[in-house]
Length: 246
Image (cartoon, rainbow, N blue to C red; front, side, top):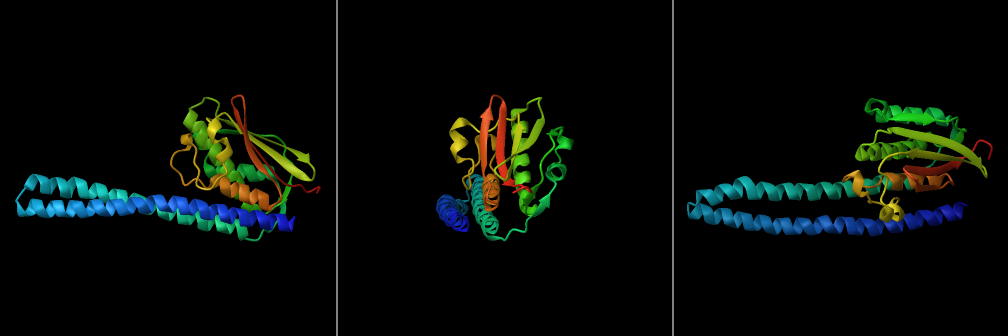
């Protein structure tokens, strides 16, 4: 089990390196292109100034230069997000766990409250849940990522069924949780990529795309698993954590 977990960590680090290489390369290329555009804008402004072309000078200073600077800032923000996401994921991979017995109903309720689900009219239907033995901070993040995704999916679909249903069962020494919602979910073509670093579904805006990756890493560190499926209108996240009975 320890060797397998170590191999999984190495595999995750390799994937992260590949993703970082890709996700940093694009904004860096953008930065180079924007810098070239800025040089052009500066030369354009100089020429306009020499020729006393006030219209061109004003257009360059008030429109072209600010637009280029905004794009440069966006590229910088993207690189900062990527590096921050990698640092966060590294902590998830290698920070030691401090497991304890957790009241999972209470954990779900606390996370839902912190996310403000009730204020947005999203109702939690929680069946009696078995306790789990896990690191409380890790579980808080796992649940927050899953509930946060469900909330965004419900809002994106604008459905009247603003419900999240949560149940559990014991299987082979693990508590297996099912978290379902009536939101838009992921498209079928996205299903195989939902746990990849830096991947965001089309319906989930332009986030950094690390939430479900972090959730998977933390679930697997506990020896569990996490999957996403769709049954009719329901999107269901299944994840497992060690049971008290293990």
